[in-house]
Structures are given as C-alpha cells and as structure tokens.
Length: 165
Ligand SMILES: [Zn+2]
Image (cartoon, rainbow, N blue to C red; front, top):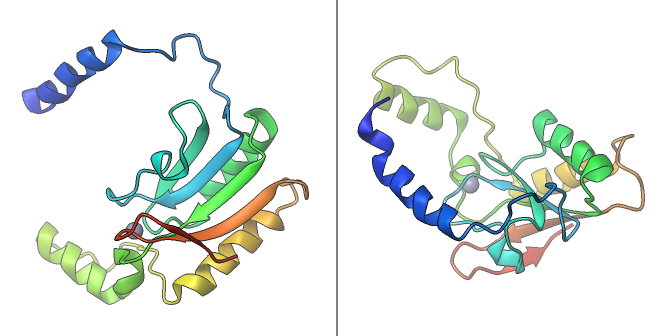
C-alpha cells in the first residue's frame, strides 16, 4: 500500500465522524434506480433531489443498459425496493462524440501500446440508443410491467433532465 490514498483516507475519517447510515439495510428508500454515465460532471442523486440511501446507482461509460446494468436493475426491482428506473445518458459524452477508432487511438497513444483489441461501447445515435436501452429494460422478462422506466438526457451545461423516452 502506498501513500497515494492518504488524503482520501484522511477525508474518510472526517466523513465517518458524522456517519448516519449505520445499520441501514441498503434498500433504495425512494424506490429509485439510475443507470448513468461515469462522467464526473454528473451527480446522479443530487440531480433528482435524492441523498445516499435513496437510490441504486449503476454507472458505466455512456450510461448504457449493459448486461451488468440489467443484473443490477433486476436485483434492485426484486430485492431492494426499486419501482422507478431512470436511464440517463448526457450531452457532450465522450462515448457519443468519438468513434471506436478514435478512442482506440487515444488510449493507445496514452498506453504507449496497441489498443485496437479493446472494446469501447461507442454510441452513434444517442437518442436511438436511449430508446433501445429503455426498451431493453421494459421487455426483460424479470422486469415486471408495473415498474416505471424512463429515458432522459442530462444536460451537463444546465443540469436539466430532458425526458426522451
Ligand atoms: Zn459520458
């Protein structure tokens, strides 16, 4: 273990001084699950007025409904009180503004070695992909029909969510 994490562990000790989730069972108190991008401009709970304990959050590059995202949503719906699911890609997302070749080239340059074999889930048409992702959740046999599923585009310049699907 290096000292690369010292500042973070120090911050964690302060965090723990006022820790309020002790003993909490980990359900989504507000019944919400969000699938969104890993982008650091997104505060997935803050943007919809929620706090830790309220929602299940699943993030990946692009905010896509991958198999792993579906796994999380199914567990959320059946075991963790989730009744509403938001799929939230965002404006100016690198996954939607780069081609696969561009990403592989940039990563390859940074790594100093070939990255042409690495998968990156680039998105050509963000709205079409969102529609597809929402349908993928809705049509899953383990996601019951009464679960509300919505697709929204988050604007990283205004903080607003635009309902799309
Ligand atoms: Zn993104």
